[in-house]
Length: 199
Image (cartoon, rainbow, N blue to C red):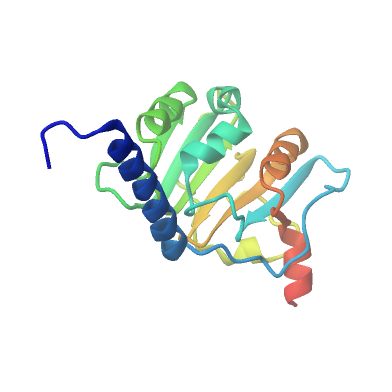
């Protein structure tokens, strides 16, 4: 091989690399359809509990950078966040639990855009909330799997739960934000329907 590769060989190498990477990604996380009914169209109500578990467009659970981008970075900035019960695929982490003003998690997630959150709870609060750290949500809480689940922290407005690298739960998500999630992820499911069907 010469020090300067011809253009056609460079293009062929790039095409080969892309093909191999698609195969590797597909083998690592094969798409599987969820057995539960789709969330669309969402019922007319103020909040929703949703589950993402088998969405073909998601490579791994949970990509919090992508989840927050779908909800809207303005949503991130408008809330205070309690982040706890975290297990990630990287040791470069923040204290557990951590309380962030909205701009802080945005900076963190944008600075670490491809990190996988295996377990964890991101609880959203009013921007001026004095968060009681005596109550910490649990990523393995059995209350998620009951009808009409509520955010675990009584002050929280909604929760995003990273659940065992298998799915992402949205608990108490306001309708406007739920509509964004369902529009972005057509395979999204309503958690209450999923629980009903599994019973």
